[in-house]
Image (cartoon, each protein chain N blue to C red):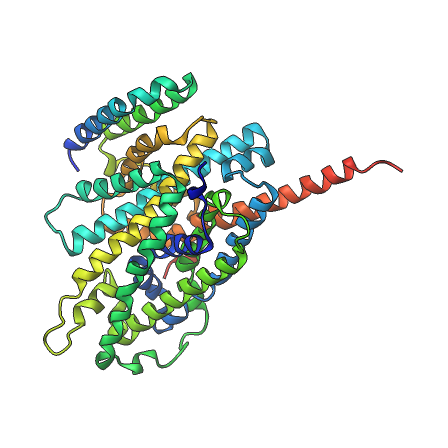
Length: 368
Length: 73
């Protein structure tokens, strides 16, 4: 591995940010609103706990098994056959998550902007782009994340132009139905935030001396702050209508009109979200390719990158006949399925690995 | 989606196989088998009417059914 393949802390934080929010901005406000109503702006905060668990496990495991990617240490912790099965599950999870990610992106683009472009074309073109990035290696994904994340965040600042249209009365009465609806509304955001565990595929490439903890906390804070900001603007602008919109930020951007001159900002939004989704897809794609490569102990993961891309295309349409089914999946299944793979599984791995380490250190201690 | 999807995937698979041919020759047998198996899996799956074929979504909906009351509005 050449020296310029080493990741810096900023790149690490940017990868995490885009991984969570690439589709998060599209999906989360509408999904969370279904439960939380005017408590929408609070829904990001319970997710901090899940994100910290996922992140803590990723860092702990990478310190216990330095230089190994997740499937490699899963095999070492659980043994050959159980390790293979759990690794296979992780591979399928990454494939399926990449498929759903690219599908959400495709539905967003074809549904809101390019109505006559076939979905397959939109999906395949970004998958090809991500495939090229994945083939070039983790360093390229990390550098493109660092380069593109500012562009991805920039359009959010334009929301400030909506100030004259905001209605603060939509926030009241706060917590009118208690805290339970807010907690239910936070289930999907915490699922999205648990995806920070995917950073463990990049940790072996991290330059030495980077303070992982500091950058991880910074990026989690940035994720929560951005989502809080977007949720707050959604609720202040749209109020009770938030839940009926497919992509609330898009509607918010269509509202922007300064001096009858600055209009149609949503074109910016599309251009900028393409890059966020590209980074998110590339991260999942890289994770899927690395998992597959480690699973079968291949010499070079680059060979299988494009075949895995075809499987991602298949998973993006398999059993997902319409956008409604994707949305239902995000609402009813993802809140459990994603944290199971991205927070519970790493947690169990940490416990199993600690027991093994303790037993090994007891055995190696001389008797008497 | 329709019947074209299979041909799209098949053409993509052929292009991938041709472009990787040279690299494929240098790899050990296991790598070649995995490469071909993944491509073949993609081609076979694309033969189905994918959006309406029961698959991962149905499996997960079944697995997480007991937890559904927690999230239903």
